[in-house]
Each structure stands twice: as structure tokens, then as C-alpha cells.
Image (cartoon, rainbow, N blue to C red; front, side, top):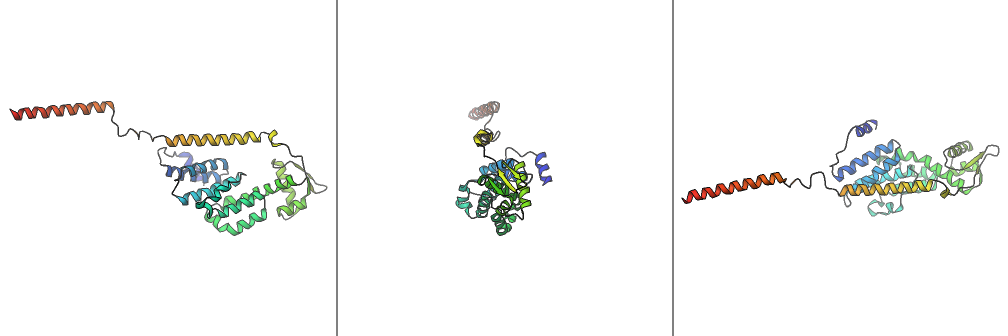
Length: 271
């Protein structure tokens, strides 16, 4: 993987390449960025690969890209749109990823482990197993967040039971890490062995909505730029069959000289 990253950084992909070549290049670039933990850039490359892929062909390629894109979305903390899983060409092949999405969304670590056990071989065949293993932390974070929203106070032993952890010490460590990372607003009462949730702040009083709108606007602008770029003619391809003014004058001059020579030959033959 480091060698692939160096190759990409030291080489330039030709702008005149076809959409099929661009789609494949963007897919591999997205895979490299995902393995390097750069999930935002990976998702951007994968979405571009989906847009540049043929609309009514290359079904296997689109299935492969969607599998990786769904995994990257989950790693970013986003839930893929349900309509993706309902598309007829993708429904069957994305069924394991739909169950994975449900487990991550619910923050159910037990369900997540069941999905891994049942579809682990398929994930390995899809080359997404390594990335899916990283989702375990996201599942735990989601579970902790849901517990924080549901309970004002809860014992660490109950937290461990709900998250299906081995003991309350593991639960205390996970809750402390979630508090430190800003995942939840809570405190730990070590004497009573419980988690005390703070009053939830109105999200519209924070900068999070602004950041979300900024992300969506950047995404729309990127789609616009890619669409405009795709509608342009390839460099010099539209005028490669057109002659320049100088070439046209030379051709007309040659035609005149040839016509004059033909006229002179006819006059000589008549005499």
C-alpha cells in the first residue's frame, strides 16, 4: 500500500482518458485513501467513480464500488441511504452490507459480531473485511451515545451489559474515552460506579449545522464542476479534422494551379 500511494503521488493520470479508465482509477484511489484512514477523500473518489461508471453496463464494477463506498460511509459515522440497497441490480449483492448497516446504526455489538461471523468470508472476498473490523469502535460509540440519550444516570455494570462487554472496567474505559472525544456529554461517578449524563444542548446552538451545510454545498459544487468538465470536448479533438486558414489557402492555390495546367494541356491538344 505505501508503494501504491507513492506511485499515485508521483504520477499524473492523463486528463484525456476515457470515463471507464477514470472510474477505475478513482476506485483504486478511493481504496488507497480508505486504508490510509482518509475516509473523507476516499468517499469523494468513490462517488466520482460511481458517477463516471457506465450507466447500463459494468454491473460487477458498480457493485464493487458500492460495497466499498458503504463501508467508508459507515466509518465516517454516516448511514447510507436505504434506496441504495433497494436497487434491483444491487439488492442481492448488498444484502450483507445492509445487515451490517443495521447493526452499526443500532449500536448493537452482538448483532455486529453475528454479521461478521456469518458473512466474514464474503467480506474477505470483497476485500472489505479489514475496513469492517474498524467499525467495531463505531458500533460501541453509537451504543454509548444511545445510552447517554436514554438514561440520565446508569450504572457502569448496566452499560457493560447493554454493550455486551466483559466487565464494568471495560465500560468505564469506553465511557471515559467517549467523554474525552466529545462523543457524549457526561461524567463518571467513580464512588457510585455510574455514568451521569448532562443536559443535552440544542444542536442548533452549535456550529454543527453550519458544518453539515458546508459539506453538502461543497458536494454539490463538486458535482457541478465534474458535470461541466465531463461535457467539454477533449483537447483539440473537435477541430482535428478542420484545416487551418493557411492550409485552406494552400489547397485552393494548388487546385487553381492544377486547373490551369489541365486547361493548358487541353489547348495544346486542340492545336
